[in-house]
Length: 579
Image 1 (cartoon, rainbow, N blue to C red):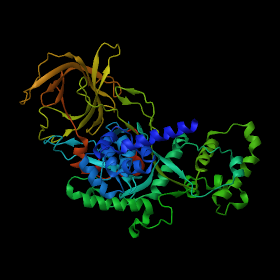
Image 2 (cartoon, rainbow, N blue to C red; image 1 turned 120 degrees about the vertical axis):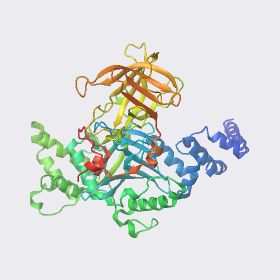
Image 3 (spheres, rainbow, N blue to C red; image 1 turned 180 degrees about the horizontal axis):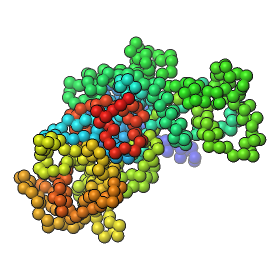
Image 4 (spheres, helix red, strand yellow; image 1 turned 180 degrees about the vertical axis):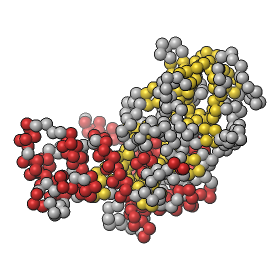
């Protein structure tokens, strides 16, 4: 009886597979739109016939479309440089979709805005420089930006990370590293150091004596000074000079750029595989040496612990030890003073080197890594509260406009009316970027539209990052008239609210009454009632602006990723840079 049931089950499964295979290819492609990539892979493992159907290029092209991060025409162009649409879908879904968007950091207060966008078979992180725009307005302005990082898609869909920066001689450099997994709903992007193990470094006995349980001390648990020093050691060692970026293209601006970008991608893949010897190698060649990493023994030396930590045996201080021998001498040292450690608590200076040693014990070399995380962040008016001691970027929760939140999203503009009007003594106007979001009032009785500042193009910050330029009672219409000539604009709506003004210092601004006007062309103008000052805003396509913009050289690598020093000036401006 059991055997008959098994045969019936097998028969029903076989019948189901045959029924699925009997469907036209167009119908299967439609079904594939409602199935996840993981389910497609599972179906292809069921039998040879299903594998031929669901592992086809057409099915995976449909999956690439479902990801919705690239138009179909670009996917077809990208397919030329990659093994299959399946590999492309891997890159689009696991790398591009989680990262594309606006990322910020608290410092400097003028604004630290990094827009992550598609390149050519790559993802590019571009920092928008705080700047002024001329009389042609934002859309026609050549916005200045600098590269922060790139993630190149390999032939098999694997991600290759590069951090941009410049060395002490002001030469542009690329710093290859590793992508250590990207969470689909990540909101924090981290620059860290990763230990790499290429061989077995110690015996099981040494592992037990050292108390290792197979769990590495996370990089984030190290004191800030060690994290900073390790990042500087790695970036200064693995950096490879590249041509001046002002003449390079990181993403296509026309169809003619495809050949140049394809050649540049090949160069980057060689750099990631072979390091400094890339120019004499082909991608098909085998890599003999391990590039883009720093020997841990050299790291100890640069950190200033060569005598105190590596040479723990007094008799071998003049001899350069292997990492395994360092462990053996370290065990003697640890066991010799174990009794004293039980009676006395370690000082902070003793604890820090031991934490560093515990981190470095898990490899024989270290390299640069890009990690992501999903952290529950508190926020105020849409702006996340950040840890200013981590080399991290934080993703802004920019909302897509919907029916009852039609003004949500990213807006840009300048002070003054009409837009773009300049004077002889001041030919440019500071560019402002704002995130507009909706919240409920504290008592829950009103809906508020909040314009959060994320960048200002002044020479000195007048408004801190994350401050509200205005707060609008979106359900309270205003009957104020626009105080200037309308310049041919038709006004559809106006709402009452308050705008930031000088108050009790930089961190505690006051607010004065004002009105938000909305035109039929989609412009927003906030007008302060007492002063008649106008802030004019329009929706922005940052990708389009950057493609037409001007690339300027980056900061040194670690500062280029996250500028941790408190500053109210424009540290990213080209004329202010120092080695």
